[in-house]
Length: 115
Image (cartoon, rainbow, N blue to C red; front, side, top):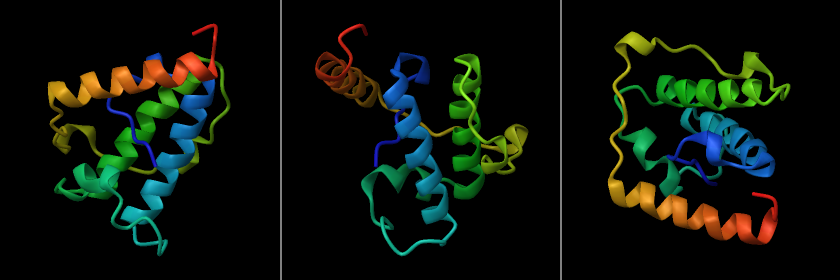
């Protein structure tokens, strides 16, 4: 499971589609609707949030927005409800962002020559 912290505009098509699927899986895990992946480290930042379900819904909304900007047809009904005005942001370290950019660059070298 990979839940990116970097801006989703940097992901290629495969990366954005995979992120959508994995974020939907994360939503089910956080809602207690699946038995697997409960202890996945990518979920720690959501578990630490005061309202994990709304936080993942807000995350999904951002993935959905990027998909719409690219003309993709993701199902908006899967996003779920959240109140952005009362939702605390999840802190991210500079090191995390740097790690993700380096990781993505390596992935794209082998996956998408045009990127």
